[in-house]
Image 1 (tube, rainbow, N blue to C red):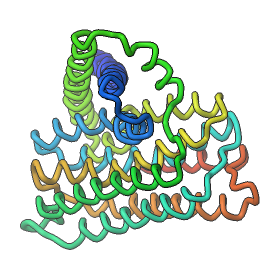
Image 2 (cartoon, rainbow, N blue to C red):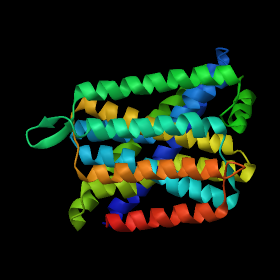
Image 3 (cartoon, helix red, strand yellow):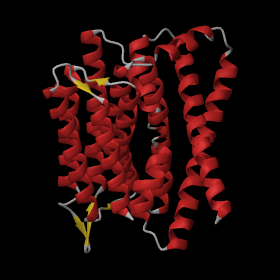
Image 4 (cartoon, rainbow, N blue to C red):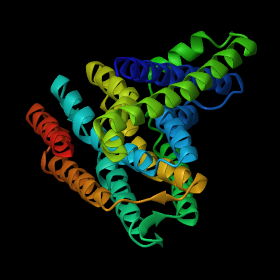
Length: 322
């Protein structure tokens, strides 16, 4: 058992470092070809923090672990909105931009209801199923959201990516293409082996203790793959950069639900357990709560008291899963 836990921790380390290497190397290549910083931040950086979940989804879908895929996607979203934002607001009050409140949170709520609908409309045998066709719908939603966000960013000319990353990229513009490609390959390998380590050993532990894949996906794997968001959130809060934090989390949540579940369903139709309906409703409630509380607050801020409340709710949620 100790060996499996050590391998899972190693897997999470490989996932985080692999995503970091892949994002930085891809950004370096983009800069070398003269792509705009805004476009780089919206595409590579925004998707980069979701790469651990993507690789775990691919591994799980090939092996037929539906509960792990859906549990990871929904669990990561709940972790992001409750734990990551709650923890960040304890460090410094988090200010929500009006366009996040008025546009991106409602888009997120729409995606949650869409997933709720898709998960309860099709059956294969006795089980509710997200089919390949529905997976394609979710992937199209992913593409539409990315294109809309790029359009929106170009329109308002507002940066929502890590300035330190861009500075780091600028300092490496003279790096050889060969070195950058090597880093990119190492990043992909880190993600591949990291996802294998996490999925395979999480399932072994679940079977040993009689825990369901659903529980493992929504707790251990969800928190582990949310590490990039957690780290980004803490750093952003310390630097006083709420736009990076909220843009990353809000975008990541939408991509988690559309891209991960859509990709998994296209590879292998996913069984949608009825227990996921409750977690989706909790996620919808939390999203609406964030929208309301930041709208009521004249400064559109989430203060420390609200942060404590979010973390307590997350702790209760985790305990209820046991």
